[in-house]
Length: 238
Image (cartoon, rainbow, N blue to C red; front, side, top):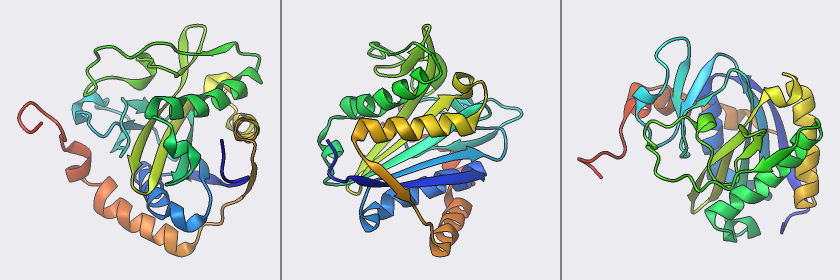
């Protein structure tokens, strides 16, 4: 499966929602320079929700949450009680040859194994998604194929964006899986990813230049009304 036996692991800190999305975009943009796939595991410094790229801004809650639009699809995701991770795969890697659904499958098999480490009988959803309004859907109440379920309840989901640079896979896992302990959940997720892809991890060393660029992008894009409130698709503009 994997062309690299060593991937890069970034155990990041909790950051504001705009910086989190900015970092992920730049990781995808520069992934070819890193020489290997990158896993970033991180938190949020305030109660936040992210909305999918094509979603209506009005789908997010009005009070108590910072709102940011992702560059990936999917529905509304609440980030006050979850562990968030990003996988960035460079173009040309074998995972990029998989179709979108199967690439979800390989990542969520690892998440399923991580949850099994807590004694949870996790399974992967067989739902095809059906006819849902993606402009308003909430991710954790609308399971789609290969989402991770426990007792019929969604515990983990993800969204992707594919460009000529590679794949950006953004995932979220409910902290209820670990009794609210993000450290233990992180440890089990890392071990499960190592086993799933038959890899080892080396530390991703982020540069000050990269962080500066991310702060700039957050300021001119992800924190702006223009980005967060725009409607990409509608009956009028297709």
